[in-house]
Length: 316
Image 1: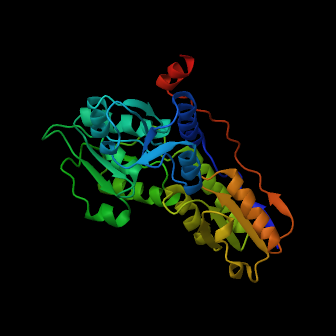
Image 2: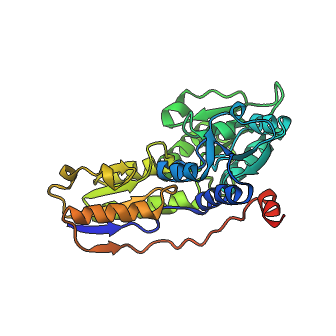
Image 3: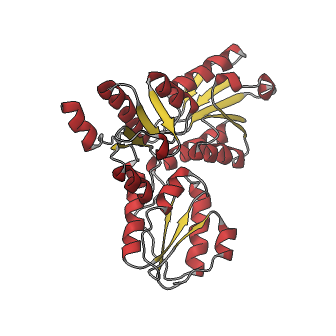
């Protein structure tokens, strides 16, 4: 049984930046750094930061007045930002710059009085943050959320000739393409972003897992269940005809899954660290796997700067 590794896999620039923000804040300011929501959707990463002293909360009312709070990579609504400012909280913003790009698009359409259709998963923190960028007065347009082609068929918007769309950054590229096509068919004057909102890392990892699944009969995606991009990788592997499992780490591998398999693929979502991938490889080798081969993939050299507020704090 051979092991084939996807390339690229694991951490993206936005996740690297978000984790580094929390670590640097803890090193500089000490414990009692509060993080609103999981900074990235990975159980291992969150537990590591908790052990270092980070305090994870779901809402700002859990943060003492005047304390330091970090916004997660998924972004937050304008209402959350306003509440933090009103309570005098010191803010370090770990929102991925590619999510911020979507926020800026929504705000621009809002100011222009357009209706906006957001393609995304209801309840996901990124979607809640993006929906929360909408600040229009009554009669100036609305923002709508759709998830799939069926939602588009049911959609009725107030301004069919003055409408734009944007997307969550971690969606399935193929499925989102179908939703956009349905929107364009229904609303011929639909406006879209100059560049795709699905981020480069999501696209690259989906391309990589597509190739991986074509070469393997079993695929393990390392990532947590609440990670959108990791779930999309598992779904895509299954669509390519491979058996696929989303696992948090090596301890979740069921040896029965390997029965009759000759080539096992391994990849990781954008919020899963490489140490977990190496743990999966070690476990597979304990269970009888042999050689490890890594596929060629799209090189990634993107780096996002730390927020100015944190850089200034580090200089003090």
